[in-house]
Amino acid sequence: MPLDGVTTYLLSEELNSSLNGARVDKIYQPDKKSIILLLRAFNKNSKLLLSADPDFPRVHITDVATTNPSTPPGFCMVLRKYLSGSRISRISSPGFERIIEIEFSSVDEIKDNVSYRLIIEMMGRYSNIILLNQDKRIIDSIFHVDAQMSRVREVMPARPYDYPPSQNKLSPLMAVTDLENRQFHFPDKLSGRPAEKAILETFTGISPYFASEICTIADIDGKKCIADFNAQEYDNLCNVLISLFVRIKDQVYSPGVFFKINQEVPYDFHALIFPKGLRSIKTDSISKAIDLLVVPGQIMNDFYQKKHPLIKFAESGLAHAVRKHNVHLTDLSDSEDYETLKLLGDLLLTNQYAIPSKSKHFICQDYSDPPQQFTIELDENLSPTDNAQRYYRKYRKAKTKYDKTVSFLKEDELAIEYFKSLLNAATQASDISDLLAVKQEIEWLNTKDQSDSKADANINHPGKSKTGKQKSRAIRAAMQAAKAKSRTKPVADNAHTTSAIQSYRTFELTGGELIMCGRNNIQNDFLTFKVASKDDYWFHAKNIPGSHVILRNFGQIPSDQVFEISAAVAAYYSSANTDLSKGILSKDTPNYKIEVDYCMVKHVKKIPGSKPGMVTYSHFNTMLIQPSLPSNER
Image (cartoon, rainbow, N blue to C red):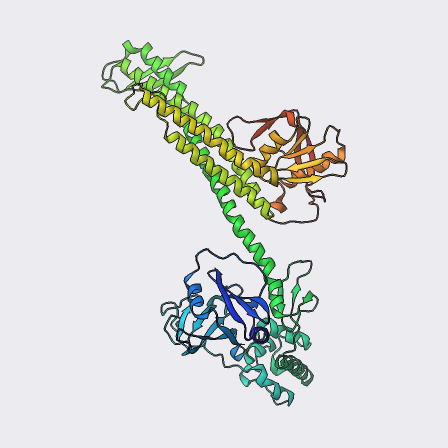
């Protein structure tokens, strides 16, 4: 929930008491919506985050580390120019609005005292951070709003700053006295409105959630109109308002976060009240409550921002392979009747003396089993022999196309299977190590494709010059290009083999057996053909993308339970595990089972010329198992 006016007011007072007099040491802008002020106050350093993020605009002290760009944005440079070395003289929130003002005092080039004001407007998609001079003119803002974007209020450099339009509501501090003296009455125009709406439209700084909780605490129906309240209900409402408004006036509050049922990540926060029936954690300050709420979501958001491009790359590669496969299927259907073209040429040669000159077609019988009659289209300008040769040329072209297409389809099928496995690895990535492994494989793919294309571009026909004659210069060029190509491939492979050794998953069982599982196809290849011995066991989900799982038994005969645990790991890291594919890390065992094939490593063979992870296997058994993981991952 974004900050409401009451929480903003209490937060401003909290920040003012802890940061008043603080010196601005450094200023950073980690992204286009946020500013970080590194402050020095009371012999300690503080990091003040100012965010104009429309999803959750906020101002608070944080300990979370941020990554800053190597080149600071323009607004950051403006802030450094005017605010570096200055001191905070006051932090306030005017009129219980969702605005925090930070006043700075400094000296200019001629040692005159000057003041600046940083305005943080926290109003959803209209949020902004604005720097003002001492004449209340805008120096710059993190977002510019010109006349085309807003006819009501411009936010542009050199313009005078105006507060957002007032809603003409009553401040809680001004209403306390009337409430205590029982002289407060809701406006007549709101008497027919539900209590929640009446509270929301009467007092400034009250959010819809706050108004609803006020009614809950007062034990009244928030949907009931104010005019329909009896005396007891009205007194209950006034008493709750007095209690909360006095706490606001005296700055007596207990901030914290609260959680939805069976959830470990905080759902929301507030400075004064907590919903009934929800678990809550109280904090020492509003800043810490905001940090507890924001950090898990920020970490998750950063994770998915890194994960999304990897998934898009795999999806794009898979879509491209499927399109190529469909094109080649069309080519195959167009050329699969190539034998008929040869037969037509044979028939023309057999019946060449029976074909009249200048004929456009010829009808003849083929007496093979079964007999057929053909109507052969002819070129009237060619002789029967030449027409036969024309069909032979079509036959050779169609046969070559058919043979090539068959080999292309095999490559396409391998590419589709490969990108399915890459997409499965990217989709099921659940931590940074998984993401790095997938990213590493994508970088390997790009490096391999570039090195192959460069090497192929430098190779002419072996041993021939462009004119077709053999020359020593052309031979030397071909040899040099071939050497360059042979040098390029192993470099990429070796670079990624080293990291594959360090980051694949391992599970050590109580009997001393070791289960190893690849995070990407490069690691799958490495585990299967480099790490595992021929007598170890290999596991993989049947006929679907998934990780290679190796059970190292160190010469011992594994028990049935060990086989089941290893198969469950292979099932867990397969595309059939729908929970993991959706990014759900559940501790409960799914109620479905997955087929897993397993065999000895010596029966697993690499498909020649294929991408990493593509294998064939034999002498295997199949097990039906529920996906799960051992508890002791190493």
